[in-house]
Length: 216
Image: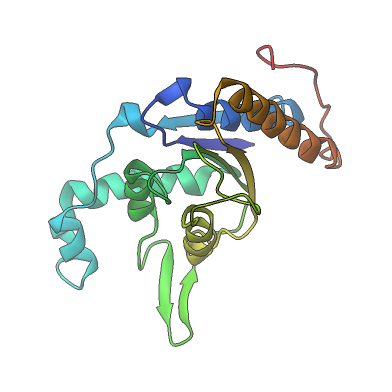
């Protein structure tokens, strides 16, 4: 099994979203001990946003003019195509996804490559696979006590199916800016939610589920 782990926080490995998504990866690895993990920390890779050459090539211009922009997109799409499972760790920035994750999405959500246009709308060309999203937010983005709109989860649930990825599970860690005690309680609750989700899944056929991995 191949796992692609996208981590979008500018805080990198220290971020709550990265830690929670790593917890998801740990469960996946325990279910498939031979799994290969490809990790792309967007804060370290400094992924450029799509540029004019990319836009020109996709807008009906000369595809060869895309140059390095399309080549970069091809690499990212190939990583996604090779993955049996996609794990995304992301914070909420200004009510939605951070710009680094938006840049990655703009590279992999690509017309004539991962989706095609039809009279009925956009149709994804990638085979579906499980997608796990670990979201952290300083405030509360869900539930009756939320005092802000959430454009992050609805956006991901709309854009990922455009390329064929519909099996989406979201784990949420909320209220990290509401004091140290509440933040730690939120971390514990989020990890327990992940534990409960994977405990309820049947063991994969032909696989032996192992014990703790890397101290998880």
